[in-house]
Image 1 (cartoon, rainbow, N blue to C red):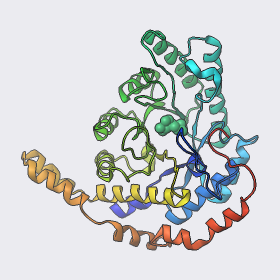
Image 2 (image 1 turned 180 degrees about the vertical axis):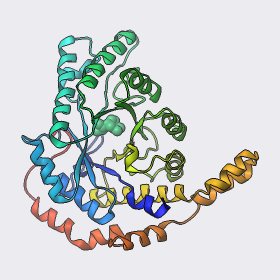
Image 3 (image 1 turned 90 degrees about the horizontal axis):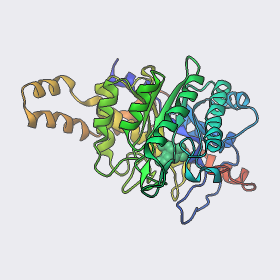
Length: 384
Ligand code: LRH
Ligand code: MN
Ligand code: MN
């Protein structure tokens, strides 16, 4: 497959929650025109797909995107030209979860949390979604607060129950996060913990790498390489960070890191949607306008991918085998330093798209329309 074909086939999944209002613990700055319902989030996601051509699916977060009829929601998405993607569970926004969800010392709370995860699989059955994405805020704040080993046992028990409920074509993605909201221990703090649980569970359980969930300086592309080799990489949650879990636009803080990640993907021949790795965004646009910010993020992933595809693999292998350190590094940097924007503009034109998606979106009048149409009513999103 040529690089152009690979770029044409690339798919990036959008998070429904990125279209709604969000903020920090200090303030949510409300924006005009934000979606008031899951349907309106899907409609906005479909607009991003219309202008970029590479974002055909949208991930839901339950219960933020709760509806009575999920099959109907899937049909609505289809009408809009997209499909429903991963179902994200939410076991972190209830008073019951103060001391944890599936690792809570209270069996009643563990049951409630596990039941929610099972309900998410029911929703996947209705939407036709392949992936259940699990992120647990579970952990402790103080030494002695709870038994770390017991909590691992409780986690394994809940995961196994949910794993056993998965259909033949369904998967579980286990996301890890170094800290926050727990500050002393986190029950799934790193890729190794996630990997070990996934290994124990079986082939339908794989790791989700959220790029914002690591200690500063972590070599994420190493994790990608390791998991790819072990066939345990299931998905990415892409975003950028300067400090902690900043959830900024992917490729904005460290485009070189994004390129290095995508280079490992290309090296592992894992870019094609058929390979089963989901490339999702997990971002919150607190101060920037939502839809153009998501278009920008999609374009940033495309640019990093196009550069990764430009790496001269034969020249790189030759330099590596000859121990030519400088040449090997030069081959990689040549690709990174190439301006791929004209190539991507051409690609878009060849697909009947506008070469400049953000400008085209701004000209389209969609924003003015949603500001008018959605002037009344409550925005949907975090906690909605
Ligand atoms: C956790 C997290 C997780 C999602 C999202 C809303 O920090 O990134 O991936 O569920 O927040
Ligand atoms: Mn995430
Ligand atoms: Mn996060």
